[in-house]
Image (cartoon, rainbow over all chains, first blue to last red; front, top):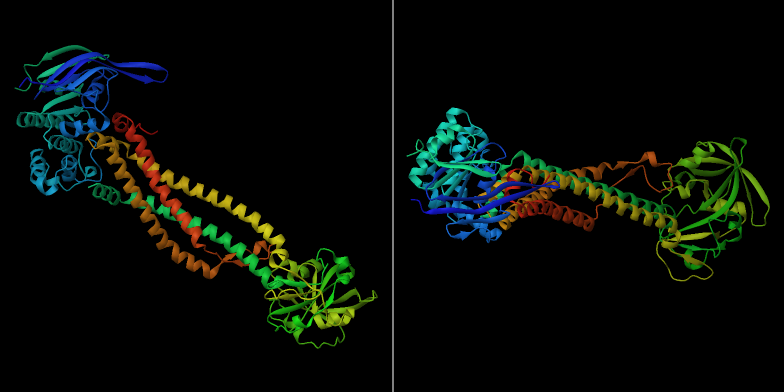
Length: 234
Length: 389
């Protein structure tokens, strides 16, 4: 189970802000194992989201290398990077980012269509996942008709449906109340066990940190602690 | 699949897509309407000048110049047999002399125009002169145009003195009676012009059978002693004005196109701007840039097709209706353009085609360009809605 999925070697990210350079990440080295259930924790501006974006191939490091299994992300073209995201990564965003004109069912179906599947071949699989996140009754509704918690569950279903090796969840509970947050975390814990997809959160929500098995603390773009959480998911 | 996604995206946007299409369609309708109105204005000015003065050209006494009134008496000719043989619908004999009118004890220099009453080539409101004989009785019957009447304070039934010189140079004067104040349409045959029967003017000036010119429907080839002045020569001032107007109308077309482009681009780009996060999400889900661009361009194409359809649906009945009522330009009656009180749009298919094609391409480009730009940037910028600001 501790086979390496993601490896970061001295990864730095520098942003240009006006005339100034702002270093969001300082030479981060890190490994993420298959099936991990972990979080990047830290205050705003600590580099959590930047780190998540780099791992997810949404951004590229200024220096250092990121490997998915043994494949370096830095050497990938934009098309290869898109393919990497399409085949291996599931994203869950703080603001859900559901496609507004699609129904719940269609939002969950969408990643499979992108991977070349035919709807008739995957209809049952989509409905199965929709059912697992408890939204069978809402399958025909559009995102605007859903609550925040329901929307985030659709985002989880969409991230899981293509059976990715890694799910990156950027502050998934930030817009939710406590009850909904706990439901979402419980759901992700179950799905992590069931689907064996590694899940990496970025969060400053203490509720999340109680659930994860590993917690990487960031401050000012540096890792200040990396510890296993024995109280987390077993 | 791209088509499926584009179709769903477009139709399910509902009101937003409809408003987008409606704005573009209304822009198209306004563009065509303005251009056609301008075309109508120009076409009508040309038609009116031909119908009231120029016909298909003039056979003139060589040297006659309408801008040299003191020489009009010197340049008259007897009509030739070949011109006389023409039917009355194909020719109009005109004799022009200078004179002075004395309305309300004032001196008013005028152009006296005599025209044959049988002619039907030129359309002039001279019916009230037809009932008279060739013999002049008490007062000479005359018709003036609305502009002339207004300037000289004349009304139907007024009797006033007209002075002129005959062929020998002898000055003569006699009362004229205003039989009618007619709408001449063309200021050139109205302003400062007193219309008489040709036989009356010939008899007054002792110029039997003479004319200053004969307006003809078609060019007949060279005619002895006369020189032919074509439409281009006779309408040179108007054509020069219209040429200038065409340049102006091109400028207007450009301004209208820019307005339409701005409106369309604004609508399209605002639409894309609002959908940056959606584009970012598609990128995060692993859709490659080319495919995103293709889908959004297809959406733009759908919007353009619908805009053309809606423009046709709303525009065609409007244009047909407007063709019936025309556009009131009575406020321009003082202008020197030969236009009627109402102008009617003149729809030029080629111009419409170009305008539609440009708007169509523009809508597609306006959909393609910003998405192209967004997809070249980091997906994180699009996800944060900051790819285009």
